[in-house]
Amino acid sequence: MARTLLALLVPEAEPVVGSFREQHDPAARRGLGAHITLIYPFMDSELFTPAVLGRLRDVVADIPAPMFRLEQVKTFPSVVWLAPEPARPLIQIATALERAFPDYPRGGGAFPDYVPHLSVARHVQHEQPAIINELQARLADHGPIYGWCETLSLLVSENRRWRDLAHYPFMH
Image 1 (cartoon, one colour):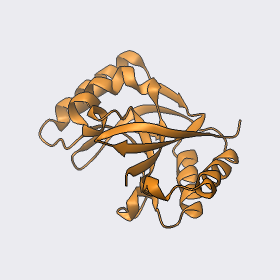
Image 2: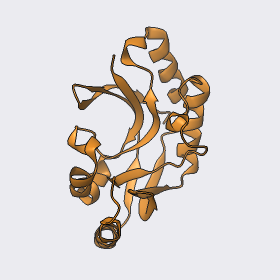
Image 3: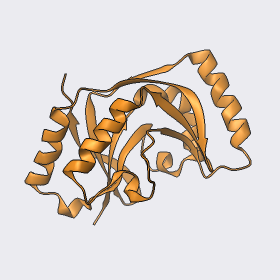
Image 4: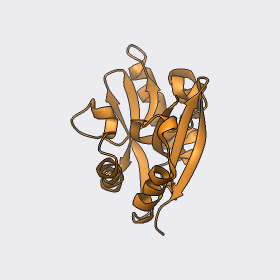
């Protein structure tokens, strides 16, 4: 039995956020690159059938590949993150997935509203202001990060490491 995740991988963000994530995000140390979570936890990997995987493929195939930029630093309690703009296409993707798999709500059902975000630092409290300042300085030097996700990624966590299980192309 292994936990899974539906996400948009954002490798374009790594030059700006990679070192923060490596230091302040346990998922990065477990092999998970910069990403925007759509559904976590998703179903256990043992429950995957050709029908389930086909449904994932079909849902995504009807959705345009999302394009966004990351330039605004925001926070949740103990989390520093980048806000994708526009957020609406990402919310629509998460909503379509939730409709197709109602037993697996966005955010695991823990949050009333889905807020698309790319986590940069997690479990940070006192160091939050310094991380925010440094991240804003890096973004000022680098400029906005532009993302275009051509595929939905299905990832699995096994032996405390994340790995790609499948990729499903969005409509072009």
